[in-house]
Amino acid sequence: MLKKMREFFQKDNKNIFYITSIIFAFILLFAKTWGDDVTFMRVENGSLVDYWRYALSMYPASSSRVLVNFVVFLFTSRHSFIPWVIYMGVSLYLLMYSFSALFAQKDHERECNIIIAGMILLFPFRVLNSAGWVTTTTTYLAPMACGFISLLPLRKVNEGTKIKWYTWPLYMLALVYGANFEQMMVVILGSYLVGVIYLFIRKKFHPLLGIQLLLAIASFFVILLCPGNYVRKNFEIPNWYKEWGMLNMIDKADIGYSTTMQMLWFGSQICLIATACLFTFIIWKKYRRWSYTMTAGVPALLMILLGPLRSITLTLYPDIRLLTDDIERNGLVTVSNRGNIQALGRYIVWAALLSLMIAAVILLQDHIRGLLVSFVLIGAGTASRVVLGFSPTVYASAFRTYTVMFFCIIAVACYVYANSIHQGLISKREARNLNRISYVLILCTMINSMFMVIN
Image (cartoon, rainbow, N blue to C red; front, side, top):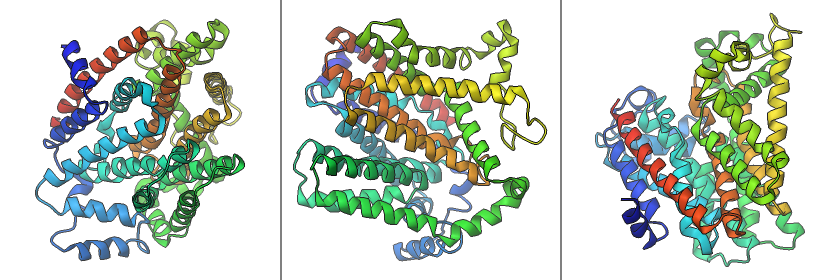
């Protein structure tokens, strides 16, 4: 079976994207509407103009996501799922395509695409049902895909590839739509700020990059100055976080940082564990030194032992529970535990793990460009989640707020793998074995997704 799958995907490097996107869309046909799909984000009967006016009216009243909400209204107002599932299939394809176009090398594109598909599908898509399938996926997945598409000009200009004039509006539209989602805006703005400066220093510049940077900055101010965000924030405090007014800026930063670190290291997320294991494998292949390999190996081991194997580990070493206990609602450091060594211990462990992974990323790269790409994506993605500590819905929005951060980390994993296979660090035999593993993961993910949607 694996041999037949390999032969089929060899015919077109992007066949794996087509197939997985079609299956993903088909599975979503069985999704059920609930939550915001049938309440807050549903508009009964109306024309496109009516939907646009309603989305625009939310800017001073409740939300800066004018474009995102407009698209949500298009699908929640329909009784048929077909337009939405097609849109989701296209969104997943664009996300995979953008990773391939951003990171894969032409000489190993097929091998990279298989890993890209496998890594992306490791993301727990169940979280995109937390406010209703239609509303949440349309709010998160589609803008995120367009956001990564909007970054393609950076690679094209760096490699001297001609950007055809008729693609300019497409890249601009992708950026404006992607940046209308606040967390993706952080990634886009960070990428273009660093990318434009780097390319300008290297005397590589293109007018489109300047336009994209201005659009990203404009998107930032559209969100920052939106009166609706402040109105909604004040409205949601009594509903979701009554103690919000008692917290200072340090407390809110602590909530954002501590919840992010806890999920990052001990959240049992397979996509993050796979990334850490991949880093460990490539560092070993590159240096053949255990001291270097452990920079990624130690975090990977702890993520496994205190993640999927947590129950076994805590049975053997119950006192380690101090690292895995849930963060208190008002943050790791509160009035009741200030000066407590346990809170300080967690910060020390997180700092140590973070330092090791930073060292691992540095070891994985051979040039400044690679370091910039890796640190901008990881840094901006993580910052997009940490800043949620300043929102009273940090807990109400739950797991879906980690989405952008997870996909940024997955993007770096794909980038590292693409560079490694291009440099010959990964042999053909090892690449085939990794592809086989990816095929199995894709198959298991699709089966799990079917049960996920049905339930």
